[in-house]
Length: 414
Figure 1 (tube, helix red, strand yellow):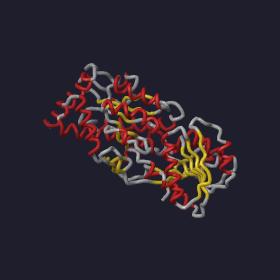
Figure 2 (cartoon, rainbow, N blue to C red):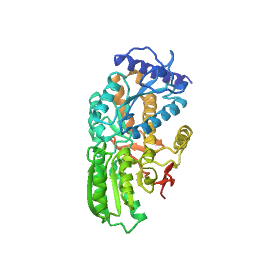
Figure 3 (cartoon, one colour):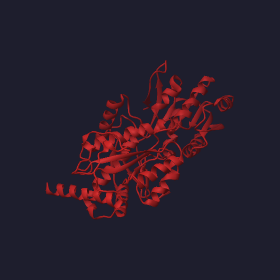
Figure 4 (cartoon, helix red, strand yellow):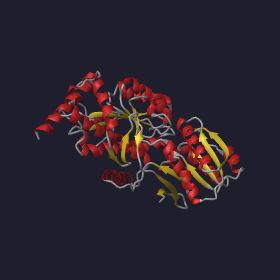
């Protein structure tokens, strides 16, 4: 009992050090009064006897990318509530501080700078897009503040710096699974058309993997069509591809543009299989293409049916709150927050962090993140020394829609 009290006291001292050492004050505030925080239950409200540990969440809450970022916000909020209900970090709650990255690089840079310089967070979960990560992560690297990417799957993300890690498996591992699933459904596939968003780093990285997979599987790549994530009219590209009579179409883009492209392909008469990339991996695509979403295949790094206590708890919390199964982007955001919480717990138990200055504290936290093993909704994960996620479980889902397009779901293939 005395040891537990001592550990909690030590951690509270560190929280005070974090606030004063970064130019803040010891004034204790409530998360309910912070404009950049999210309302939570009483477990996350600070008082005169405790100070919450601030963790930044920098994801897209506006723009066309918000269809993905909104799911990340949901997952992060559920993690905050869940882990605070379990005692937080050895008795001290966490406080998530949200900043909107919007959908471009400037938004991500501004969000990171605000979280680091104004909100004084101890680490950041974000951003939503790989394109944003390549611009914003170097800012955190120079500040020596840990970053955990929840959905940055492009090549070379962890190589940005020593303080950059990700819980999102690289596209090179995930993407080929959906093409193999398409071949399993139709072994007679021969011709493939590829579409990708040329203004998005992730989509460009993903399409390279898809195109190589097509060649590796002995298929014929008949055309590569480019578009912008801001596009809404795909008639020209879609017509060009359909005229070549492909058996399979592969799309790398985001939910809004990808959903509209699927809809227009079907309206123009394409009846073959469609594979969507990770940017389309959200139930928010369903209202975009509605009944015409039916049959789309998308590789997954998460399954709601994955066994394990933490995923069972996450799935129940999500379905209770949102009345539908949790998507991958929510699960990955939850996992990123979980990694911070469990790394902080482990560091507090072994390092007497109240004696560390803030720069050393962040460095030791970053080291602890990389050496830990975590049982998460994604399954058991860890990290390589450079921050690449180690994950073994992957899936493929197919969208199943009601005939009237009013509702649909991701059905996981066996």
